[in-house]
Amino acid sequence: MKKAINAWSVPAGISFETMFLQIAAAGFDGVELNLDADDSSSHSLTMDTSAAQLARIRELAEASGLRICSVSTSLYGSNPLGARDPAVRERGKRIVRRQLELASALGADGILVVPGGLDQDTTLLQARENAFAALSSLSSDITASKILVGLENVWNGFFMSPFDMASLLDALDCPYIGAYFDVGNVAVHSEPDHWIEILGNRIVKVHIKDFLPRDLLRLVRQLAGGQHPLGQGHGVSARSRLRWLSDSRGQRHAPLSYPSVPDHLIRYGYSITGGVENIKFFRSGGNKM
Image (cartoon, helix red, strand yellow):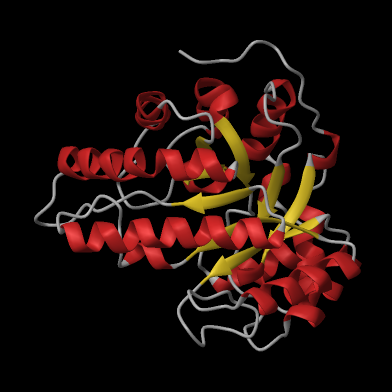
């Protein structure tokens, strides 16, 4: 498995070139870039980033020895694919298409998509039906692009169990739509290795992170004491599951993701993924239910 880091982990004022050099120096194999609103950071992609700019970004990444492994985005929060309003869903679909364009131009093999749409006027059933319809309508575009679309489990109430995610992916029945499994996002309420066992080969990419409390004192103590939660408890079990997970799509990337940090914590981020580089995938006939 290749290791990458999400660009949100790097302070907003740092340029693409400097960021790539720092990430490469820390030992990462790749970087996950983000599609954000205009002027979000010096290393964000936007809906209007030009082809020439994308070519230059790719050139800088490759010159530093990094691969751009995927394209995430912060834009689904206000443009959910499961929204009640058709106009909002259309904006969400436009974001998916833009991510596909960006990934293709940057040489990335995948994008991260967050389905959602639950609110006081939209039930989970309605949000799921709307998201399913939106993604189904994009299936031909996704297949034509040959870019993997990973649906991520986040804290928006949409994927409450691995069965929810597996059911939606199976219903979509698109070879390029799978799970972008976030280990930390389920550690608070369930066992990550159970999700991995159930999702199996539906997983196309993985997010890992040190699942730390917001309490600053405990954060400092953990950093000072070298206590890396990914190396304990949930992380060890999840790594064990990932070792036998069969791979039907080639090598996966596991981008690290956590709040913006200074340069030395990029190196810390690399350190907490210890053992991930030893995870290998073998074809074993799939794990669909």
